[in-house]
Length: 124
Image 1 (tube, rainbow, N blue to C red):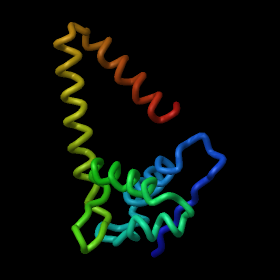
Image 2: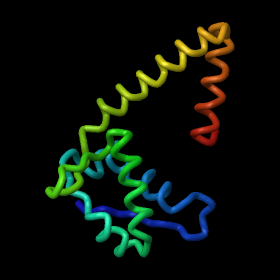
Image 3: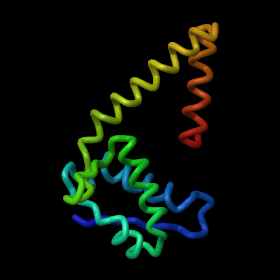
Image 4: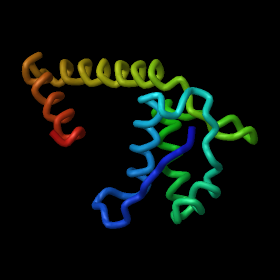
């Protein structure tokens, strides 16, 4: 199995976001299995023709999302993201629901706003 990333320099989407999205999708689909070792930040940056900071930013975002994990000098690996991602999403949803209720929104208003946000995030 090989890592396949294609960065479109003409895209309106920032390169770090293209990289983050592609790595996340490959990890979640199983194309990159749990435990797969990713290239170093510098190595991947060189391979893709990107700045090291661009790759580092994508790796940081993926680590925050629980998609990858860094094991110090041992490298960066695909994490068991399904459970971690679901837990983080559930926590964020609970925080939103609590806040919407404190703000006095009705259940219908809170759901409508959440649906609008998800639609906007997924481009639908």
